[in-house]
Amino acid sequence: MSLEHAILGFLNYGPLSGYDLKKVFDTSVQHFWSADQSQIYRTLARMAENGWTRVETVPQENRPDRKVYHITDEGRAELRRWLTTPLPPEENRSAPLVQVFFAGQLSDEEVLHIFKPAAEQMRQVLQIYGQVPVIFEEHIRREYAHKVHSPRDFFFWMLTLECGVVNARAMLSWMESVIERIENRDYTISKELIPNLKELKDEDYDTER
Amino acid sequence: MSLEHAILGFLNYGPLSGYDLKKVFDTSVQHFWSADQSQIYRTLARMAENGWTRVETVPQENRPDRKVYHITDEGRAELRRWLTTPLPPEENRSAPLVQVFFAGQLSDEEVLHIFKPAAEQMRQVLQIYGQVPVIFEEHIRREYAHKVHSPRDFFFWMLTLECGVVNARAMLSWMESVIERIENRDYTISKELIPNLKELKDEDYDTER
DNA sequence: TTCTCATATAGGATTAAACATCTATGTCTT
DNA sequence: AAGACATAGATGTTTAATCCTATATGAGAA
Image (cartoon, rainbow over all chains, first blue to last red):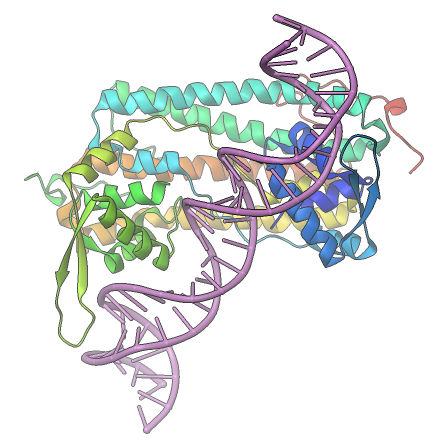
């Protein structure tokens, strides 16, 4: 699980409570790792049992005590171990691609009715990405200034955004090319993208159905 | 859940057993939707309770009975409903990006030690994608020829591959650009990709640590 | 005055999935 | 003769995550 390691990564910049962590997740990594509030609390509790974190209970008046988590030496070791370990290839499950795979069972109009909102969604994602650095910088300047260590840290933070933009642009232009082909009733596959494709001949199809 | 709908999609081409389905998943959609064997059986059982499928038990000698699942009218209706419903935006969790985000805590060499295997992995993925149409076509010609309906069906199947290739290429060239920048100790963010980025000045950083 | 928002933590229920293991047997290879 | 592989199905356990709800209270807005 990476939630644990993401938490360790943040705690390594300084101690935080569950509440703090939720805010940090939402304002910095939500574009590639969303975290549920209750999940954060539960994970934090488990990590304290593991010995990766140490809890400091800060009493407050008229409010539940803040439980501030500090990273321990074991936690730091685990973070380093994980950060330097190449990850096994992810298998990405994509529900939209399931729709595409079975889209032959729909009419052209219905297919476009799926692709057009999806393309529009991608454009919105790109817009949101455009605003992430603004929000992120505000946040850094206000509350977390003391946690920005160096331009090099900042570089890696922004790389994750770059990755998102690259991805979203690639998806968008692919979707647009699909929309164009369908509108032109041109059901051909890009030879450039899929070179090993032999064209199936008519006799390969069961035209009975 | 899309596993249900993927199963409905396949059953709509013709009745299949759990065992058949596992093979079909592994040879056609594994590049964007892997399915666990036990998960398939359980889902199939649930769907039969739902009324989306009907079970036909085919006795065999010296072997467990085959339980062949047929799609019902309700199942077909549900499939259509789902296929024509635009999906809410997916939030993609990416453990590798978590590593990138916290890579500032590592040395350049250690970062390259993550990125280089990742890039190599991507190249392999692209190689595998190159062979998918070959395997897929063999499969179609042998066992599932009767299930290929039309060039249009085939078009959508191959679109899912196109998408994978587009994605993998985008990721690979991004990774290569990151590797290059790090090797040159050039920690700059692409202005073309992230235009809204104001450069942080030295006084914005806490140089104490 | 009521309502929402912010602060702060936490438990219950449910879900999708992964992982391991089990039951049977036929065929093919070493 | 032993082992691997294919056929065919199924259960138990654990994990990560989501959703909903509960407990407290202060501050500010409608």
